[in-house]
Length: 458
Image (tube, rainbow, N blue to C red; front, side, top):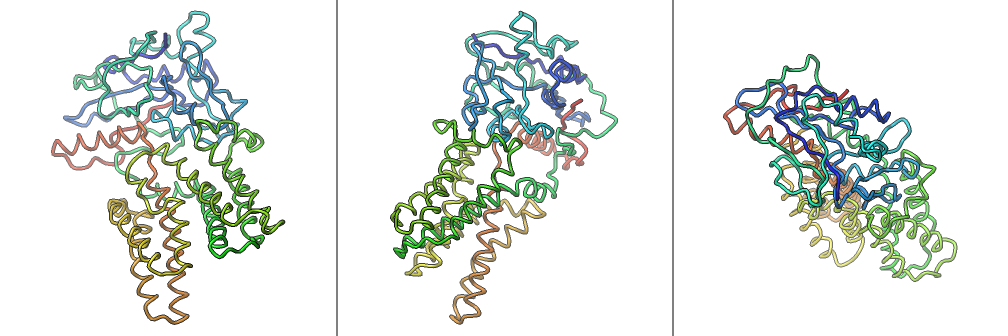
């Protein structure tokens, strides 16, 4: 029997007692239980929906299977428990969970999430959020299978959430008095229907260590691959220095760097664990190539580099399974192969890869509608492709150098776009998109940024 939640949207009045009770009972950060308010300003002709949600304690929890540090366990009643003493704060579970349940607490540097008040339930007492709900909108139940359909705005990725939603598509909702202040999410950023044009810049700034890590590994892999193609057994120190720098940068991303050693504990089911293992292996290979040239055949070194690149891409593909990301020319494997084609003969190889990159850019034309940094990067990437060929045509040293500069800059821009186009399924985004679609379908103009979907958290 699995224990889970029943939520009746028709009974919820957005009082946030469930969120407050979770904080007070468990000492967790605000937002561990989130109250999503859809149309909390009561825009006319559009549903008013509230959704109180924490961890759904899924039957196949993506957070647990993807955790490289084995920081999650599953109780006999199906409760998914996170163990802070094992967590290294990588945040990969926040990507894989479509319900925004695990959240990094920036102070201690590890993940916090609902554990179904395991101590209370062991004694037969309901979780704090349930006992605090004054209207009975939130309850728990035990059953073998949580069956039933979910509304269009609820992400269903096949992980079988232990949740039953009632009246989530009914237009007859209680009137919700609009909040006095603008709602904020757990990061302190105002939420709105319309995308904030600073989101791209903020996202890249936040994830700079991941970007730097992948770029360093790509450059080291390109050098390793070129050495293999030239049968050069003197690997040199540069690839090792690049890989060592990548390892250092990757540690900076962690909330608890002292637990980095736990990253390789779950290679069977965690793509991130496999990535770290392959990157460590590639670092060792580049070290041996420098210290003992020829000890490892160049072809073996190149194969290890390719596997490391593939493992990097799989970390993202496991969280975002969209076809656009899988065909993205900014993925690590394609970027490295494309870069190698610049330095090898015949040039036809480079031309073929450029055509593939051009097709990928055209497919992603929607990126140009985003505005801000993402739009600039997209158009620069699009213009860099033909510009490189125009500069190559004269065939003199100056234009050749300029062509290479624009080629490399285009690769970097495409890699940045890969991170910006990476969008794992997330209930926040799906509610936003569904609300805007419903609002526009009723003949309304786009709502103001202060209207629409918000997180109401204590």
